[in-house]
Image (cartoon, rainbow, N blue to C red; front, side, top):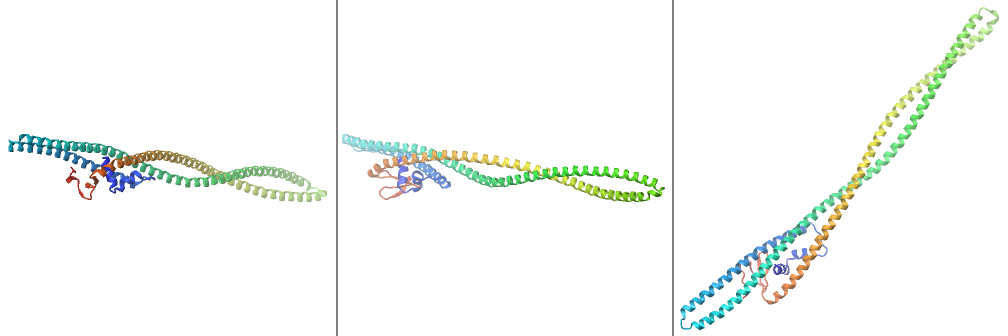
Length: 363
């Protein structure tokens, strides 16, 4: 297999040479196809070598049978020259034995090449599996990178959500302060309302007392001026009472408005609390997803680096083996015919292209 693989590379099979000797190796779908074609070539070479081995065995057997037939015919035809015929047959037998030894040597070489081709086929299969695994890792890495890009977009959204949370928290604090101020103002208004009611009650009592005094003073003529003054005071008191009642009504309206404002602020505060809680949960989830994606990317990158180093080592070993085979083939090229496997055929070193199944050996 060493000679056939080297001859295939010398005959111009650039596809196999590029896989083994390219310095800047980049594995993609094309590399996987090249490895697959290499495996098919190796399987074809295995079949050709098996056929050549069987053909050599048949050729050796045919030559041996032919020698014995010639010996028998000559012994029967020339009874007088038996000793000369025996010497001639012995010489021919020695020549045939040398040819048979050469055939056996070539058969052993073919067997060795067949074993080497099987080993190379196994190595090519392992290389193909490594390439497929590397391609799968690259696909997973691309998916991880797209996921990271999405998470980066989500991260920008997280920043926006954080700003919104801060704004909502500020609004929440302002609404709390407004609610406290409204409650304090409401309590103050209620206190003023109670004080006004007490004043009104005391004024009513004073009016009743003054009215009773006025009734008692009506029978007296000398107190008419005092009665007029008393009625004027009563009128002033009633006017003051009406003013106080209007103020109390206004205070009650303001109190009701403050209570409604407190209810609205409480509801808004509750909604803001719910929204802040939801946004914080969403931020935590996005941060967790971002960390997991980062860890997955680091793990995928490390795994791909390991696989790449292994495949590069295999490629370097194949290149060294190719150089060694080329060095072994050079002496064979200068000694005679060199057989080059090209798609199931044989190229003869002197310029003739024949089929592998009809080839002849130069002896």
